[in-house]
Length: 267
Image (cartoon, rainbow, N blue to C red):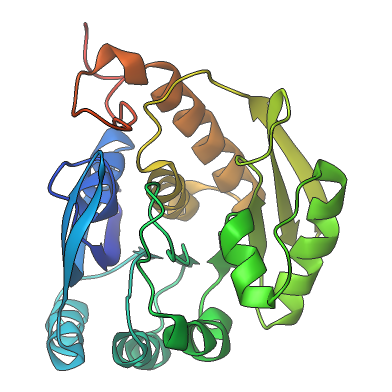
């Protein structure tokens, strides 16, 4: 069976992040990808130049016509930009309830550009997060959600993951990739407890779209996985390989993309 997986997110013309990265990830992992656009982002490897939000009413229309027609086995949610769009997506999730929903709470681009309006954070946490199955914040995003300083030590990750869960998240993958440790350390909180997940830290500047790619990979893999842990571990392994192969590409003058098709393309 080929699963159908939907991404709800903004665009990236350079192809490294957003909907373009999600669709590449879905294809690389053998699922059929679909997309609902929430924002048009003039973005490259060097930064975000301009954002044009899609009206919430049209986001709802995209979702309703798709969900009424196609079986959706899993959903990945990325950039939502404003409160109206967040509410539109949350409403559709409550009404149609896909089996698996992963939320990547995109707030800041790799370049440091703001992608979520500050006033929308409350809606993301209060209205959308309880409606999804797994939320995947990085350390900066978790700090914003909690209103606390950014964690700087790996030993503090489990406690912060628990505090994010206390906001209403069913499961949390707290990403510690911004730490300076020799390994890339994430913390997964599920109904089974809290687990520290480790992966080799890849030395590359071509890491544009890592958060989008990881969350998309989890959504792609969850329908065929026995549980959330297996989907997350396999997704992390895929991302590690995509990072390790990223320098094979030559895209842009800034932070280039990971290599989504490293398992399929012969260089």
